[in-house]
Image (cartoon, rainbow, N blue to C red; front, side):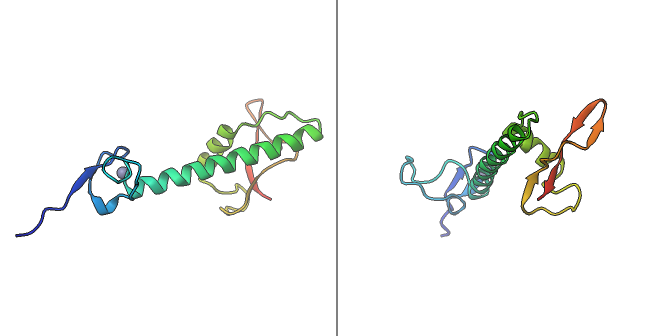
Length: 120
Ligand SMILES: [Zn+2]
């Protein structure tokens, strides 16, 4: 008789998946992570990106201050722009090594300066 595969519900995507779709975790009651491998990878990617965006905004603000420019960039604004630009430089369309434009903002629309992520 075929043994039924043990399944577990992922706490993130709510899908029922086989145990092999979960990473092991000695600290949990059932010995597996509460979320599946796919969701785990997404969480890792997001937290990595969050650190990167924080780093990017810190670096930008430091430079802006030195030049007497407004230093008000926040990590969440960087994340927003990254999503809006689908993670690409608006000039070169390249995904790698994004850098915040630290010249005086050159794009003006609706009386507001828009800053974009550029490849450094
Ligand atoms: Zn999942």
